[in-house]
Length: 176
Image (tube, rainbow, N blue to C red; front, side, top):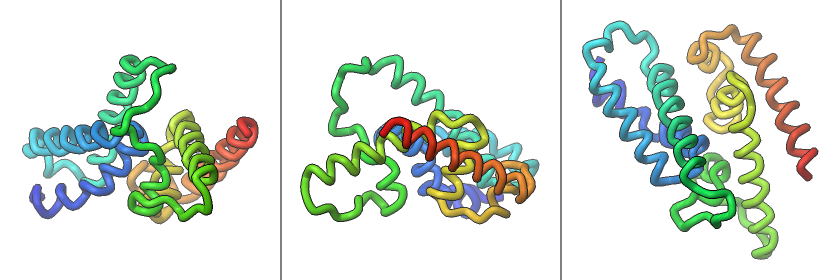
């Protein structure tokens, strides 16, 4: 396995994963950098890794969750977000950083709030439902690729994803 050919091409996907968990651009960049560093430090074990994308995603997810916990402890709840805070993490994932055009600033604000709530609800889903939503609905991976990455059958992916979507919808509607 070659770092440049087999590891580096996953940077963008890892960044989107980290951003969806941390909701903070600088922190997501740090998580991806740390993921790449860990991959390099474990280069002696590359021959044992059957699916580099899955391995990198797991490392990145663990690092991002740790980072999110650290950020949540450091940032009081009543402090407004800074300019470095990503205001609409899911919109960035869906459209490469651009939100859908809106007619007014009020609609844009409502859209950002909805996306922020949805992002938080995804983070609250139990494993593997949170991963399934990210991999299928945000990353756009096929059921087969998700099954390989998470060591599940395709049927399990479909069932768990269906349950995750229902749970997400119900929680979102309760908040409305």
